[in-house]
Length: 401
Image (cartoon, rainbow, N blue to C red; front, side, top):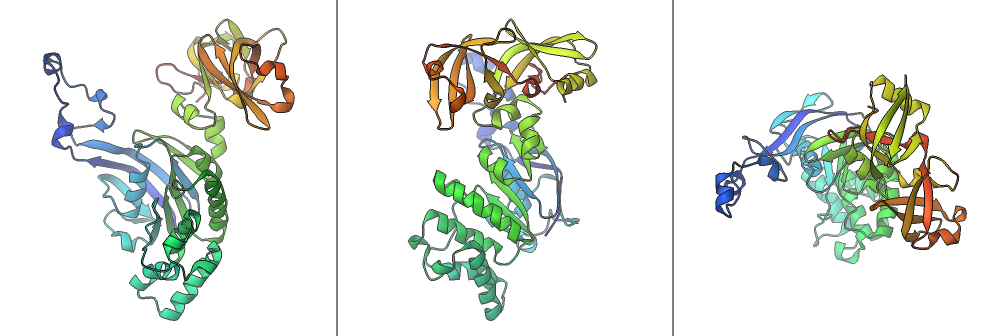
């Protein structure tokens, strides 16, 4: 069990020669100043910024998930916690002790890697015993600890096998077993399920949830899969380009995204976005417009806009596919043409062309007339007043917060 604190943590890699200046292709480029915004990574005089001012307080036994697209800095942050990467600036504390200069083996942290990292010439038992042998644990105690870890993970029948005789899911359990066998304070997991097929990933997610209840450890889990993040995490840290975009519970980041990136990244299918405007109708009264259609807002959303003194302005209007409903009643209706319908069993995903933009609507199968599924059919729909999101088109921040 452990608390962790990351305070103003930065990771900056020194520039290589080919990073300092873009390749020159013609005279025009030679004459123009280098615009650093053309780089995908943030580059300063110090070097390439992989993690920029990361701040997070992690409670004892909390399950934290770092999520974001490839290259956003989540694995780098995890490796700094493990001690596998140096912290350029900032501080890492575990149980109140500053750990920046403490070697990895003295941090009481275990890590599960994406590629399992098992020794192929050793049996499962020998793989599990290996970290205990390094710590010179007595043989009888070692046997007891290995047997307990194997029992928790359901790998007791495989202790005499070698990794090549195991399935992907079984290998991943062994890798987790090797990490938990010595009861570390903090368990780090770096995309541990990415090599498994969809069915095994679902099974292993359930196993990790069960495991978490059995262990007195703080979990930090890295993934690019937002489904894993939503199902596993007590809180989610959403990252982009080395910066934290939002920290919150799965429900908070789903219902109250702080910016356009979070709104689009969390949720499957992604949130629909429209060019529109916020209309202030009176003191503390608001609506939104998409095209020529005015849509009502819930009282709670109007109150938050009023608290932030939002006036009438252009906005990016967002609504999740599951919060849009088909309706033929007059008033507050957006009209579109069905492009594609995807049958998903209990629901249908309708792709609607609205003035050249694709809008996805999730409709329960029982609520949908089969005639409405036909490509080319005209449909009318509206947004749930309590589930409309409004973002500033310049800053991309949520106008409610």
